[in-house]
Amino acid sequence: MRKKKNKANKRIHLQSLPLINPNAAGIDVGAKEHLVAVPPDRDPQPVRTFQAFTPDLHELARWLKRCGIETVALESTGIYWISLYEVLEQYGFEVRVVNARHVKNVPGRTKTDVLDCQWIQKLHSFGLLNGSFRPDHQIRKLRTYMRLRDNLVVERTQAIHHMQKALFEMNVQLSNVISDIVGETGLRIIEAILAGERDPEQLAALCSTRIKSSRQTVAKSLHGSWDEALLFCLKTALETYRFNENKIQECDHCIERQLATFDSRAQLSQQGESLRSQLHRVCGVDLTKIPGIKEERASNITKKSSGSSASNGLKKRLSRSICNSLPLSSFLHQFLKRLVSHSIRRRQSSMPRSDTSRDSTR
Image (cartoon, rainbow, N blue to C red; front, side, top):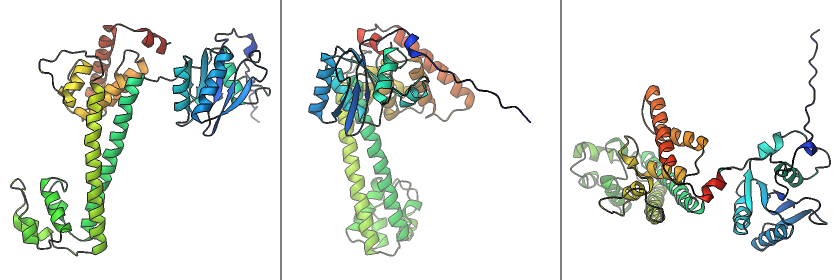
């Protein structure tokens, strides 16, 4: 018989470790309430429960101030930690958002650490927790606009698919004769169909001169069964598409206004208010000159790399996000990744580091 290997239980005696953060607190974040733990000698009740309402969050921060707490560690549970993080940041605490997996994987937890917040507080006091990167408020606002825009683009695409589905179910083969049903010609024909026009010749006459298919072919594709329910689906999808299109344009204006608040890294000969010129001013270089990168991709790169506190992991993710959008061979992918990483390092080494950036990299 094969002998089983004896696996010795490796335990860490935390009490033998030096205190790195004596004024540390730990918070177990929840959707309805937060459990907060401070060192036992700071309060007769070192573990308290606070509700997630805004007045309770301020009361939590004031209690931590009275206990002499300087740094706080909390788990990144969903999105419930964001409001708490912002309140603690307003009160001047050093806040670290830690990965729940990192907290769980540290050995040495004893039965006396009943609550997760006590375990988080103990690990943070011994300096065993690393905080996740969180950009400053200016970048977070830009990221919010960009994420909303991405969601609107997805919803707009879904609306186009619904329009195509309704047309195909009526056997109207419009997408087979024109490349884009939401282009100038496609929207004209769809609007005429919803207005009650059924004559294929009249609908084909709405085609632009740039359509390569002949008018006879277009007219032939516009014969179909005009079902009332499917026409309603087509109308709803068209309205949804236009609604999302308008909101995307509003988001673009908000993004341009937010980019206008960033410090300039390049002096442009002609000051413009377009998204491309704003990105050029903020980044210091015109990223849209790289083949395959347009304004949308360049704005995504900006929201990930702005600021001088980008770590090596962030540089790698940034170069990966650039290269994944380009149709290049594997060799060119590796070359471009190295080129982008080298450019970022040179750019950041030439920038003066502020106190805020030094604190965020610790």
